Amino acid sequence: MTLGPAEKGVVRTQFARFGSQCRLYAPLYRQVTLTALREALIGVPPAPEVIERERALAYNDVVDAWHYYLDHDNHGRGVVLIGHSQGASILMRMIQDEIDGEPVQSRLISAMLLGTNFPVPKGKEVGGTFRHIPLCQSNTQTGCVITYVSFRANAPPPANSRFGRVKDEAMAAGCTNPAALSGGSGELHAYLPAGMGGNIVSAISADPPSWVTPPQPIDTFFVSVPGMLSAECVSNEHGSYLAITVHSDPGSTRTHDIAGDLVFHGIVLRDWGLHLIDMNLAMGNLVDLVHQESKAYLAITEKK
Image (cartoon, rainbow, N blue to C red; front, side):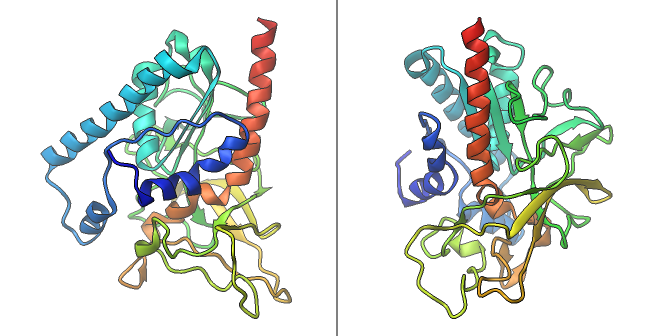
């Protein structure tokens, strides 16, 4: 439970930008490490009892942090819960246990549960995972969920995909497009890591291509690529996912592609999609959504 470069890197990459809209609280919790992930990738997963014990540790850490926050820091304010991958899975369970249908649900502005499979009944916005908390359908809807898993539009989830599918045949993996919550395609406002060197995912992702031609040094942590990326929720035989299209301009000196695929021993693992940059792809959109949702939430609470 010691704050180190890895934890600081995740906060900087996936969370810090929300500080333009919110007070930020980022609890430390015990979680699966990159070492454990690499072992799983080579077929050496931990024993089931170890997995169960470690999941319980992580969950209890987060629930304890939630209770502490409510008791000491919340003061009745609205809350946006944000998690990716492991964090999103833990938040799903915590919302089920602690928030869904409880009085504190009235403080939920939204829950951003990204990079995880979020089951909802096919063709519906609520049910399955949560009983009373629906998928977000507009930028001013509050008390709802924003969720997606991202894949390249030209590399959809394969048959062995880890994301975009759920076990229950009556359910589908929820997908809400942060660039167009009401449906259809929208432009992504991405903040992509300028370089993977020193980044939390450096050991499991290919380095990004040169951002411009001829190559020039980049002295910022992030790069924005206006007009280059768009997204649309897609549901087909491959699953339900956020399809990312890269719009390349052959005459431009800007890069014609992005990095973000998980690479292991030089092989792109298609079953992971763009999991490593789920949040980076839509970071600007997500921050804008928090701004609009918070404004709508405050208008509602002021009327009460």
